[in-house]
Amino acid sequence: MPNPQNPVLMIIEILGFRYQSGDEYGVILTDWAWDCYQEKTLDAFVNNDSEALDDYKKLTKFMMVGLWCVQENPSLRPTMRKVIQMLEGVIEVSKPPCPFPFSVILN
Image (tube, rainbow, N blue to C red; front, side, top):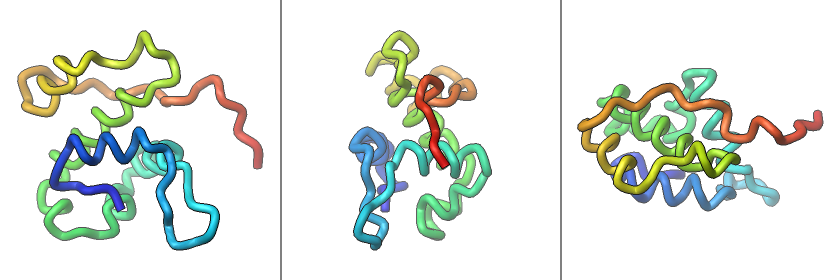
């Protein structure tokens, strides 16, 4: 599961794209992160980790920053300087758009 205590590691894990969820195929982490963010089910994303859930606002901010960092359109991705400023609370984190708007989703 992504490390909710370290925002940098969480972002790196999101950038890794695949998370082994116990089944043989794994999950595309960016898809799962986006779904959890959209559905407001970050508790599932951090596997109900009580420490992470103690500061749900901070967890949400980390998730939003991570989603900005994995935007399909490179021009939408923040610089590392801006990422640090967002994580430190120097600048506000705006709601990220869907990170993969051009992808075709097959059911």
